[in-house]
Image (cartoon, rainbow, N blue to C red; front, side, top):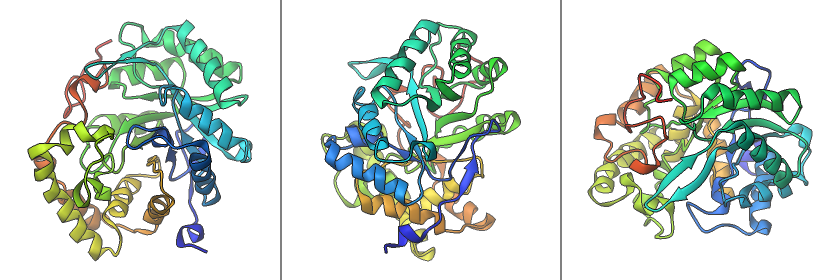
Length: 348
């Protein structure tokens, strides 16, 4: 039996509305491309099943992944697993991508319902456990979007409501219409802009936090450092993975590598453990296409960090030394105008 199979993945409450999930989730996006070539069903489904068999029950997808193909893949995998033991999250709201890279969001009540019905069909399920607005449509009052989501909860089509990359003011206004269960945001050692305002707000309102890209889009796994960035990967043109920025950021990885040796783990495990230690209400969703990486991610649950350890790990990644924006300027969430500072006021 491998080590990951022997690790008990804890259960935690996500938000205060009753949703309980595995402390470590699984982001399914990468199974349908973006970071690597998309996997065929016969390769992707076993990874989802393996994650479940090792204690992960919280799976995250979105209608835009593929597009649509990821939900179909996840739906096929769910047919081979006990649905009642799965917490399934998907998202709506991104209606298109542009060239140069950019996104368009839509949050009208009619579109909310259309997307939900379509996702239910692609996933081939009767309900969605956690349904996120993927990006906020700043042209539609959040109260209108939330009103329709509330109706979907009342109809039993979704159980809980989430937001992704929303501003503090929008979070408050949305939560006033119907309780928000989870907020999905980018959060890792080198992307920490939510800590000052967003995290305290979530804790004030009882909203769980779901960090995506907790390994810095694979950076802390060392792929961009000890290997070469795949030319067909999303990160091959990412601001932090190109030219002088990457050369500067390698210093960060080297420091993490040295610290990981002290903690007798891999750099990726140390980086993920740091996120896991940010609170019981924090449930990161790293994704992977390889079983060995899945096992390593689960192994991060064994890495114990005290207060001084957490300070030391944070100190190894000084934010003023991180070179490059956290994402492409035109792919920044529609409410977030700067990569380093959350907005003080809503742009709605």
